[in-house]
Amino acid sequence: MVSRIDRGPVANWWWTVDRWFFAAFLTLMGLGIVLSFAASPAVAERIGLDSYHFVTRQMMFMLPAVVIMIGVSFLNARQVRRLALVMLAGSLVLMVAALYFGIEIKGSRRWIHILGISVQPSEYMKPGFVIICAWLFSEHARRPDVPGNLFAIILLGLVLALLVAQPDLGQSLLVLATWGVMFFMAGMPWFWIAVLGGAAMGIGVAAYTTFPHVAARIDRFVTGEGDTFQVDMGREALVRGGWLGQGPGEGSVKRILPDSHTDFVFSVAGEEFGLIVCLLIAMLFAFVVLRGLSHSMKESDEFSRYAVSGLVVLFGLQSIINMGVNLQLLPAKGMTLPFISYGGSSLVAVAISMGMVLALTRKDPQKRMRIGSHTLIRTVQPAE
Image (cartoon, rainbow, N blue to C red; front, side, top):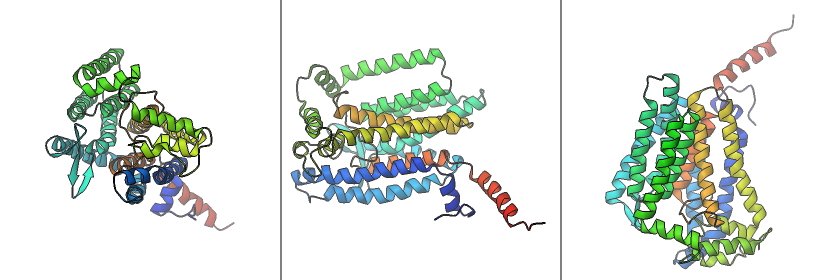
């Protein structure tokens, strides 16, 4: 047990970190392991791998992800900005490299091999992008002569250009929506609201007319015609599960669902554990977003307010997109469920993001040390 009068770094971290956030993140990670056991063996066997191939790899990534999340949460705001700058610069370079030397999967070049490990640079770009944009917005709010908003717009254009070039339009819309929320919080003028709204509509129309796979997905979603096998099976898994599920390991639809361990792990959760567990998962994501926004509303520092809001909105929107696809409320889009879906790049990147949230929402450790020192002095002071 960590004592309140202990002034060490671990004690300071424990008594200043938001333990509700920390518990929610660990719970989601634990659910990721449980659902990996439920969803991935059938996929591994179907493609000729050991039954627990994906489970083993998920656990191998989970341990360093927890360590990284805790490690990042020890940082102060300045150190978070420095880490974000390194992540953003490195990921942008790797995104450019992926266009020329990356692995092509289903017509997209989003992955690159580094020391024998497949890495998706765009996953690491997102938290770095949010933090740097938050810093630019806060600098402009603090000193209007600093063109922080302009630089944030330029950075957005660069990131969107690289994402569209892959192409990854789902991530493009996710980044644009998150950036728009942060810009709105930073006091976006109505002119820019209209410009961004028009730009979003223009991007949607351009994507529909330019990329056949985007048009096909939207058409299938609207008309219900064409190859809708995977989304139909995802919905069927949820329907079969009912409120209480068929029981661990008793799901049958997962055995024919191609991406049951990644994009459709939420459907597997519904089939084996029921809609009640699905609701609890959705409530956990909602809790993280609402608690993050509550923290940001109370925060006096502009940078921390924009950064925490941007990170939890990014986290929440990605979970909404994944669950919406599983429920057939959104067009099919390959996007992972944070902390739960299989995927090393996604898991570690989300761990870094939430480590930043923990770092930026910590109570002032210096203030705690001063208050604790005064309390200790009063405690040991001899009675008169």
